Structures are given as structure tokens and as C-alpha cells.
Image (cartoon, rainbow, N blue to C red):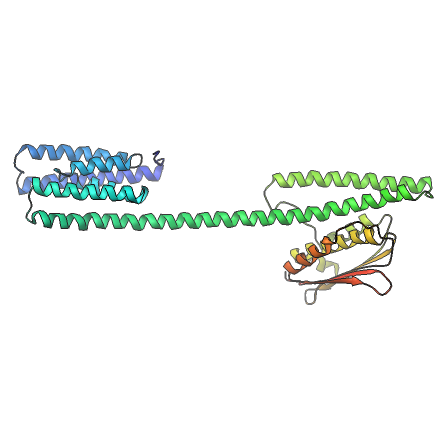
Length: 370
């Protein structure tokens, strides 16, 4: 299995472990010479050599921890100076390899401890030495298990954070799709209105026909511009789409005015428009946009009144009322449902319905603090 790449932090940790391992090797060697060399005498030299080889195995713990731990366990069957490298390698296997593999290495280390107790008897005896090995290796393995599960919890938390980020991006994409639907629907409804007038109004003068053709050309150009902006935004990070606000309502009404009789009234301080909350302002813009689109579809030629009022203490109120007109039959009715959802998400209220003279009204209240 491919091991992890050793970065600057990894190099620092490995050098520190190797340095401490050298210290442990010198300490154990000095302790053996102080207490008396093992019998036969050549076993001391073999123990020293095995300890040096085990120190070299520490440099393999990232790439081949299981193989290095197995060799270190074999060396520990007769070598006391290989104890520290074996503990480090056992910890590494428990943390980074499957638990079944770690159990085999743990069992091999205990078996090697039993062999060591027979070859080099200690004051504790075979059972005492095995009990000490169980406690020592068990403590290292337990520490490794704690580290393993802490890493797993961190990885799971990071994965959940990534999933939540992805869900947030998906919600942003869905909101963007709704914004684009409203924007292009508004443009295309204008195109449909004026193209229909050119098709069915045979009594139009050349000047009126040229004016309608100019509106069609202008709206086609704007639709193409919007599509280019959409493509650019979809290629850019989420959040870079310029969002409309209350201040853009006048431009929206002026854009829809050709061919329609629209009265527009703003009943609050112009400075308050700049202070209007972003979400409520954007929602108000979309409500007016959808209401104007519906008026063109279902009440062609009718007069439309757009009123925006309110302030920081009262909230933002939007009303769009149109009189009776010719219904083109276009539309699915989903636009108003979408407006209800959008208004509810902004913390506001929306109501709509017919008026007494056969027209239609759309009225919304939005919080100023949204």
C-alpha cells in the first residue's frame, strides 16, 4: 500500500523519533553492560546489531508499517534494544492499518515476548514478563486506538462540513436558477407581447410597427446580454451574481413601459431605499417583475399600478394592481407559487386575487430587517 507523503512536519516527527530511539538504544546498552552481559557473550553483540536494524525500520513506518513492525517483533524475540522501535511501529500499525492487521501484529509482538522470556530469563519469570508485555503493548495499542478514532472523528467532521458546503452551493445554484427563470421570463414576455402586436395588429402605422420592431430588437439584445452574463456567472464562484434591489425597480418599470400603461409610485424616503435590506429588496424586485410579466400575459393592454412603500419601522410593502385586459392564455400559474415560497423565505407575506373590476392584484409585506 502506498504510504503517506512525508512533509516538513513528518520529517520533524521522524527525526525526533529516531533521535529518541538512538537515546533509548544507548541507554539500554549501557544498562546491559552495567548489569552484566547476557550469556552467551555473543548475544550482546547480536542484541546491539538488532537494535540498530530496528532503528532503521523507523524510517519505513510511513510506507511499510506492517512489514517493519513484523520484522521488529521478530528481532524483539532476542533483542532488548529493539523494544522502542517495536512500540513505535505497533502504534503506527494500530493507527493507520485495518484493525485485523493490527491484531496480528499485536499477537506477534506478544509471541516474541514469550520467546524472549525463554531465551533470556528475567527476574519476573516467563509469566511475569508476559504480563508486563501485555500491559506495555496493550497501553501502546490503546493509545493508538484513541488516536485512530480521533482522526476518524475529525475526518468525519470534515466530510460533513464538505457535504454541508456542497448543499449550500446546491441551494445557491437552485436560487440562481430561479433568478434566471424570472429574468429571462420577463425578457421573453416583452418579446412575445410586441411580436404578437406586430402579427395581429394589422392597423399599425409604419411608425408604430417600427417602434414595436425596435422594442423586439432591444429586448432580444438584452436577452442575449443576460444569457452571456448567466454563462459568466455559472463559470464564476457562487455569490458573484449581481442581485437586484429596491433601487432597481424604477429601471424595471421603465423597461416594461413600452406598449403598456404603468404608473409607478415610491412612498418612502429615497435614502431609505439604499438602506433597504438586501433579501427583502431582492424579493420585492422579483415580485414586481413577476406581476408585470403576468399582467402582460393575462391582461394585455390593461393599465398597471406599482406602489412601493414602508420604512425601517413598518417593513416593506409592495402592491401591483392591473385592470382587465386580453388574456393570451400563456403561463402555467407556477410563478405565483414561486413568489409565495420566495416571500415566505424572506419572512414576509403575499396575497393575490381578482379585483372588483375584473383586474388582478398582488400585494406583499416584507420585513425591513430580513
